[in-house]
Structure formats: structure tokens, C-alpha cells
Amino acid sequence: MGRVPYRESVRLQKDLVERRKANAIPDQLLFVEHPHVITLGRNAREANILATPAVLSRAGVDVVETDRGGDVTYHGPGQIVGYPILDLKAWKRDVGAYLRAIEQVLIDALADFGIAAGREQGMTGVWVQGRKVAAIGVHLSRWVTSHGFALNVDTDLDYFRYIVPCGLTRPVGAIREFGCEAGYGNIQAAIVARFAEVFDFNIVKPQTLRERIA
Image 1 (cartoon, rainbow, N blue to C red):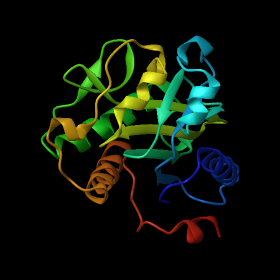
Image 2 (image 1 turned 180 degrees about the horizontal axis):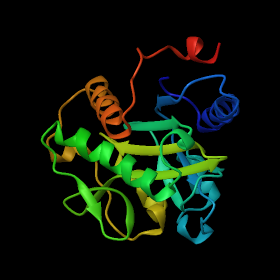
Image 3 (image 1 turned 180 degrees about the vertical axis):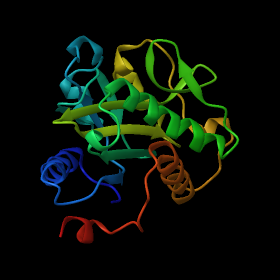
Image 4 (image 1 turned 30 degrees about the vertical axis):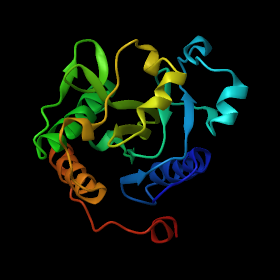
């Protein structure tokens, strides 16, 4: 979908969720990149935003409350953001299993590029050498998912100084730091392939946004 303002992506997801509930469309996997934005999940604490509104405004960072799970996170250029719109009734009615599956997709995709990613005990997300490279936050409505994951590729990590990411005082990282030189298209293709494996899906040819929402 290219670079899409966060609020616009939320409106699109809500439309697709309702269409998925009605079985008007199959499961979807959207890829986007967002302009600078801090999002607050349902469990967010305002204390985890470390900058004033004036500072964020000068830095060009929007702030948006959202219905995904989790705390505070940042999205911006240099991330691959994925939004699966899935009916889990056709897979597993298990939120924990879904989160672990998303983690596995990213772990397996990064392994394709020689990056040994993994999990940290008791925490959601994907980590490399103790640094969090992917955040995950989801929402379910009648077992249909929205929101998803954000993988730092060559993200300007300096923007994370404005928040306590996901409420954790742990370092963040981007996969370029760990030797991944693959292009965005190749990384997305690896995620799609691993998504198909982990969820046992058949993936159809990606559509343009215009075709997808027609």
C-alpha cells in the first residue's frame, strides 16, 4: 500500500474487518509504511510518552489512540508494518497462539537473511541480540483480527527516545544493524512465504489497494 497515514490505515482495516465478518472477502495481509506516529494501545500509560505535545509537533510526530492491545509504540519510515485481517475461527480461536504465530513468521523470515531472531521470555515481539526489532499489537472482533506487527528495517531509532516502547525499558534495534541488506520487496516476500507456511494458507497474487477495496 506504500506510505499511508496511520488514521487512514485504521479506517481501511475497520472496513475490511466488517467485510471479513460478512464473508464478503477472504483473509487479507496488508503491508504499509507510516509517517511518524506514536500509537497508544488499550493498556497504554501516558507516562510512557516522554515528550511534550509541543516537542512531538515540532518533530512531525502524530499521536493516535487505538484499540489494539499493548502499550505505547512508534511507527515511521523504514518499518515494514503488516496488518493481517484474518478470521481465526477458521484457524485457531486462541489469541496467544496467534501472537506466537506472528512472532514465528518474522523469526523464520529473518532467518532467510541470516539473522538469528527469537523471543524473550514473557514478552511479545521479536528480538535480535537482546534488542527488539519487531513489535506486535493486535485487536480481535468476533475472532477477526486487525492491527499486527511492525518490523524495524532501517528505521531511524532516534524517534524511540520520545517513548518507553511497549512500556519496556529495553533497547530497540533495526535489522540493517545485523547485516540484512535485502530490499523491502524481498523482505516482504519472505514474510508472505513464511506467513503461508505458519498459517497453512494459500497466498494469491498481491493486489493493488484499488483492486483490494473495490
